[in-house]
Length: 381
View 1 (cartoon, rainbow, N blue to C red):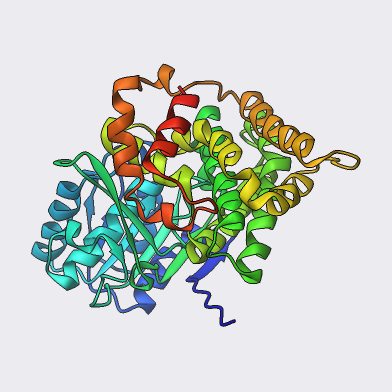
View 2: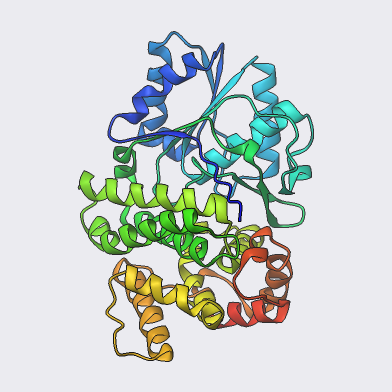
């Protein structure tokens, strides 16, 4: 069986961010659009990257009108700035929102169509301008993936654009940039990375190559997240979680995901809820639904997380694995239900309707009906 694997160039380690100007110069930048958000500006990281561009003598303009769960209108506004300012390269600094927005801007700048028209798989015909991603969180892996997630405000849904064309040219992955995350954001983004690894491993699109990266992500994040949340200034622990996020991104970018992400995209689109938090709340409920369809793989996941499952039957292993995930979430301070996040029973039919149409649902290990998705949402309330 043929297996395809795609990934960008990346530089990992303390100080990687300082190479932004050098890479921009090497890629032929005349003027750079620096895409970020107000929070990243306040943390000082956007200025840090701007200084790297200045050291190379590169002019730039900043586009920071980016909100969590980036909106199609923000992408189109950014594309107008890119065009009017005469930019020919984009640098994204931030978490998943600025990086996804930057990808959207890049798509529109060369393909000359509204960003929502690219929903689906391999719909981007014309290559993007050079894109450099500098992540400030350890979880989304937008810096290495072929995913671009944008919110359609009219239909209140997050769309997935999946294409080799949206893979950044280089990711500069500097663990020190995650030290400005608060403990709860560290926990949620870490659980997002763990969910990426889990869903990538059980995906129907997985392969031996993606499995290798997914299991390394699961091992690294599950065994280090608790301590990383407790010791936010420990750069060694930050590096481990950042590394786990990178491994997870390499896995899911090539294997795609599953029900957790399809449902989280629906939640983020309808109710504008934080993506990592949504994944954290949903993950064990989707695992419980899928377990019997991919029991062997879930058991490997449990063993990779360090569980001793010897002497247990399949049902006991299932309960031990789900219990561990639940305990890990609570240990890092994630103990909300969907109801406590503002989701009501009346929201569920619309949430399920949109989740069942999401691209990620097609590689879920168990075929799910709209009714199945409704039940999972209700269990997470």
